[in-house]
Each structure stands twice: as C-alpha cells, then as structure tokens.
Amino acid sequence: MTTRTNLNNNPSLYTDHYLSEIDDDLTSLTDFDLLKFQLIRQRKTLFSFIELLIKTELSYENIVLRIDYENLLNKQNQLNKEYNLLKNEYQHLGQTCLYLINKTHDLIDERNKYYTEWQTNKSLLTPRPDWDKVSNVIDGGIERWKILSNGKSSEHLVDILIKEIINGNQIEPINEQDYFDAIGDDLSVLPFLRIPKNIRLFNRRMRRRTTGLLIKEIW
Image (cartoon, rainbow, N blue to C red):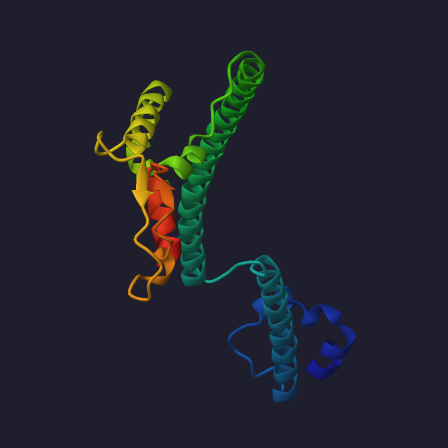
C-alpha cells in the first residue's frame, strides 16, 4: 500500500496527533500531502483565532478608551461640584423664603391687630380736624399755614390760629376815624373815588387778608 493510499484510507492522519508524530524525515510523503496537512492545520488555527476574536469583541463591546473615560470622569466630578453648590444655594434660598413667609404672616397679623384697634378707637376718640381748611383765613394762604403748622400738635395749632385771627382783626391805629369825608366828584378825582362831598363814608375796618384780596381784585 502506497503512502497516498494510507492517507486516503486513514482519517487519523489528518489529526493533530498524527501530524505531531510525523518524523522529521518527510521523504515518505508527497508535496501534495504535506500541503493538504498544512492547509487543514492552518484552517483550524484560523478558526481558533476567529473564535478568540469574536469572544474578545464581545468582551470589550462596552469598553471605552481610557482617555474618554478620564474625560467623562473629570466632567462628572465637575458636575457633582456644581450640583453641590446649587444644592446648597437652593437650601439657603429655601430657608430664606420660609423666613420671609413667616415674617409676612407676622406683619399681616400685626397689621390686622392695629387695624382692629384703629376701628375701635375711631368710634371712641374725637376725630382729628382738617387743619388745612383754616388756610383760607390765614394771611399767606396754604403755603404759610404749612410752614406755621409743620410739626405742631393740635393744641399748638389752636394757639397759632387764635394768634393769626387776633393779628388779622387788630385795628391800627386805635384812634382811627369812624367815617371818611368824600372828596367830591370832580374830574380831577379818580373815577372809583368820586363821591359827592355831602356824603360820609363808614370805615369798615377790614382785616388785612380781606383788604389784600380786595386790592388784588381791584388791581
């Protein structure tokens, strides 16, 4: 039986065991047989590498590069710091908000208390007069009254009002005549002073303010 026949009839010749037992002297095998053996062995080796490659790809499917991992880690640390800062600020703002809410409730309660007291006192106490009305009888009007009444109590305002009325009604001089003699109705006399000489005019003794208003109106 030739070597070719032995190879064809003996499948064990294609195994690794058989290939490992081949003697260094390969003169008994043809080149074609050797090539066939090598192809079989290399194909098995190739399949082994392919299997290993597939396993490796499956194992490292979710693995990222180290530089990407470090970048993501640094970014995560930075975000954690920012989150902690924002969390602390939020807690501080929350506490401040609660404090303001409590103070608002206290102010509302205090306002309601004062309003109730005001309603009670409003019906019991004498109402405060509107002092601005007296500016009509005071020389200088509302502007002068504001100056006189600034920072004064009701008692002081009454004293100021009495004083102004007395000064406004004071007669000057004391020996003033009760009547005026007319100066005639000649053309040399001003039109608004022309009165026949036989008529006597009563001295009305007007107050300063009234006199000032009349002068202003006539002028």
